[in-house]
Amino acid sequence: MSASTATREVRIDALRGLFLVLMAVNHVPSELHPWTDHSLGFFSSAEGFFFLSGLLAGRVYTRRWERDGAAVARRAAWRRAGAIYLAQGLTLAVVFGWTLVWHGVTGALPGHAAPIIVERPFFAAGAALVLGLQPALFDILPIYAAFMLLLPGLLAIYARGWQALVLAASVGIWLGGYFWRGPIMPDELATHAFPWAVWQLPLVVGSVCGNLWARGRTGFFAVRAPMVIGAGLICAGCFLIRHAYVPPPVPIPLLESLSSKNFLGPLRVLNVAAAFYLILCAATRWSGFMRVPPLAFLGRHTLPVFCAHIVAAYGIYAFPATFDSGPAARWLSTFTILGVMFAAAALHAEWRKSAQS
Image 1 (tube, rainbow, N blue to C red):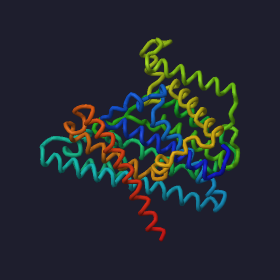
Image 2 (cartoon, helix red, strand yellow):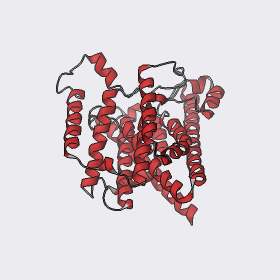
Image 3 (cartoon, rainbow, N blue to C red):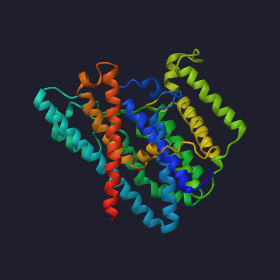
Image 4 (cartoon, rainbow, N blue to C red):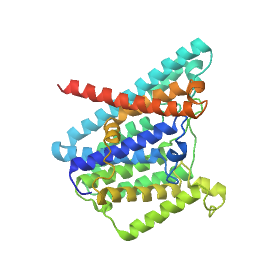
């Protein structure tokens, strides 16, 4: 990418903010779903969020490693893992409390809430402490926390120039997770949306790209006409197939497997890689691409914004008559969750200022 480092960070922050918005809108009733849910083909906001998180982590902690040394970078990464774990725990505690109060008052479960919270609250709390409880919308942060714990080890390997080895290992683990779908957690504990073996792939690939970016090796950002054409054709084809503008070239069950979101099917991985290549090319070619201050603001405060959207979604699904009874109600749902996210970002920004003063 051209321009300054700060400019590049604004673009990546804005992209993260965009994927946060898409993710949040998809998690509540909304009239925007036709435009936010797989609008680019076999490519959802989750893949984008994971890749960009890995990209920024690889870049930021590589620079910390080179500037301050391995020990400082390691402690910083582990502190971040601790912050993610704490955020997950606090968010679960809020949802626990909300679920128990709602059930005590109404005798029913609020939407999205896991029955185990009211059926076996102490067991559920213990499972939550060890990240074993992953009800709806809580799947992402445990994977990210584990990745941050492993990141210093990855950086040590990258420092030896063995990025290709890490990529090969990550692809091997992904293929193993895709083809061998072994025992999974009981339904009462998990939603199974993000099996770790496959969803490590966008995080690890992103971290390799971020590491190379920090070292000035930005060849993967280069705009090459044949690759742009090829990536464009892949994205266009996936879009047409995903939205049934053309008949699928393979039987539907095979297409569903190849494009599986939960298990990151090969067609989905190809679509995501092509789309991100085009996005990075656009950021390279046009200096103003994705420099959207409101989205960048959300992207700079990803963790509190993500947690706030979970709490808001659980609250919204508890009141279907208010938030899902018609178009106006669904617009209210959309604006409510976006308002909560921006409020969380603003509060976190103010907290940072007060902590630094």
